[in-house]
Image (cartoon, rainbow, N blue to C red; front, side, top):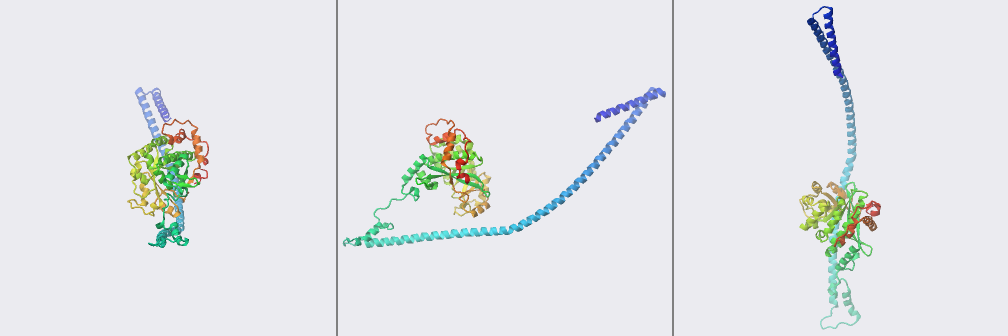
Length: 505
């Protein structure tokens, strides 16, 4: 638009100059050269006038814009001054609120610190009294045993016939000898020693080692190993983030025997691989069921080192391959002693599971001598340590890692520290000072059972899909192959799996 107007003005000036040149030529008798000079002079004058007027117009516009900018800057300066005064007022109010809060919180912090010191002193006193009572009880038992032994010896000496003397035939004379034989606390005169008792557990009462192993074998084959779930919560929010699956033996009398009480017999009878296969199958079913409600929930499943070297491990690996879609939510757990006893075959098996996306955890720590770099390289992402060990209450062996620095050290290598066996609130307070992010224990919730019918419902839903044919030797994992041929159907609810059980943890 500006260019068109400039062209129009130039044409007009040329027309005016040409008209004047023609007029002076025709009217005033100027020669042609003089008329041209007059036209050029007029054109030059018009051009100069146009340039000066344009410059004056631009200068006026610039002055107007500068004035507008000056007014806007003044408004901005005034608004900034108002904002500054408001900020100063807010800073003053915030400082007053902080001062009042600090004045209110300082007495509470002092009282809390005093309470913490008192609780620690009380815990130390209780531990000292417990140790003293234990020592006193041990001394009392030793003294009672010595008294009973001396009494039994004196009774045996009194009942024994002297050399060349006939044994009295009256019942009264024979009574001390009979008493000496029947007394349970007089082993010096026992005729036949009692059969050794293999366990003090009520479910194993009267059974020997071989009988208990046979009982475990029948329980595994018949599926009488129940699955219990215990939550792992975040600290200090106490929000459930993981579950740990623990096995319980369902005895004939209805009692549940903890894994710690029957694992030694399962290891002695080489039953750990079968037990682990059953646990992995059920854990996969539980994970699939849990993911219908919350895909962020994970499950810890315990495995033994013997399973990694067993001949059936390839079938377990095939089962893991079929379920690699849930690998981020299933964590295989190994004890510290099993980790230290692992050889090349076990490490190769761990690498095979890690290639399929599964993560590992190490638990049952006896000391804090761990190598985070090596554990991370082998796929370990969690370490579970007893709270008493972290708080230096278990009398663990000395280590270069201070418990307060363990969480940060493991975090730098991508490993989360989980404190287990938490049973009191003061323990939680102390663990928060150590920057422990996860906790597990009876303080939050005990292990609760997963209903068997819920697991059967999962298997029934998944089993409706076409399962691939099984090869020879896959009998141990036959249910697993059926249960993982396709993803679990969304029919049913999570309450069907852990209603009144793990879902209420």
